[in-house]
Amino acid sequence: MKKVKTIARPNIALIKYWGKRDEKLNLPAVGSISITLDGISTKTEISLTKDIDKFYLNEKIDIDEHSKITPFLDYIREYIQDEVYFEIHSTNNFPTAAGLASSASGYASIAQGINHLLGLNLSNTELSKIARRGSGSAARSIFGGIVEMHKGIQADGSDCYAEQLYHPEYFPLDVIVVITNTEIKKTSSRNGMWISKNTSPYYSNWVNTSDYDINAMKIALREKDFNKIADLSIRSCLKMHSVMMTSNPPLMYWNSTTFEIIKQIEDLFYEQKQPVFFTIDAGPQVKLITIPDYKKHLLKFIKKLDNIQDYYVLELGNGAEIIED
Ligand code: PMV
Image (cartoon, rainbow, N blue to C red; front, side, top):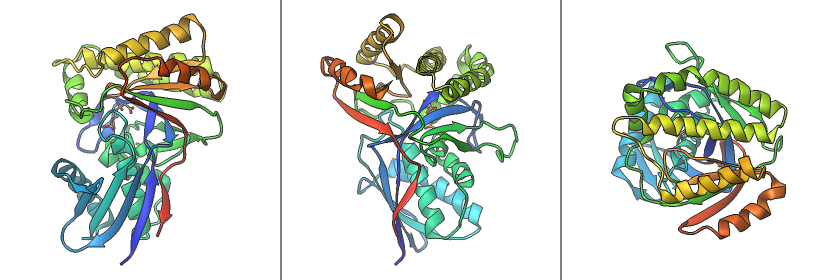
């Protein structure tokens, strides 16, 4: 039987996405800019089955994950106008649902795999729109390097897609993901975004200032200006977390270790003028970004940290790829 195997990597946003302009079509209220990572990944094997989808995550049937994948596969069936069913085995080599965007690499690898399995010949732009239906950030993992997600303005989402701004070698960066807690998060980003949109008094300012942040980041990237990239990333992250924290109920994704690390990194960057910055998503892990020359110093700093569970040393990587068929 025909099978394909794909690989996709998580990405982390420098200019963050939080909030949807359309829940059903999964259209973001703001654009975002991300980097695709290398060193952690989701590998997915896909084949056709009869009458019913089968989904295995890390070789186990997970009822929760199954219930999220089914609507995504239903959407694909509707898109291709064909009543086909899939057996999907996805394996992550990093903790699932711990703020490391496992859904991004997961949905991107499935979209790319189905495209190849059925010979659909869809462009990466089109694949990013399909992956977006699974999770907004998955659209970005279709591409490698530095990626922009366009929020678009059309009601049908036709202009809402991701695009590569720069390939991974354009600006070599090292990323260290510091794991402070591997428990599954209490509020999913989908629910959290809905809560923030409906309750945070800062939500409209967050949406209204996002185009400015995107444009400023594009200039900083064009100029390869690390300090500007760092400052804009830190402020986009803290602005998003201010919206989260002022939601009702409050969305507090940090723990005391998260806070301790960002205080120290803030001091390293703003006071001691060292080339390192942090970003945090909907979870307590801290992602530290630096240039290759400073990696050794940063690793020394991390080894001295108390209370961390683990860390991953990563670089920038490619988009979703076929590894076997
Ligand atoms: O699309 P989701 O559900 O993976 O949401 C991603 C939201 C954040 O990770 C918090 C920010 C971002 O832009 O990745």
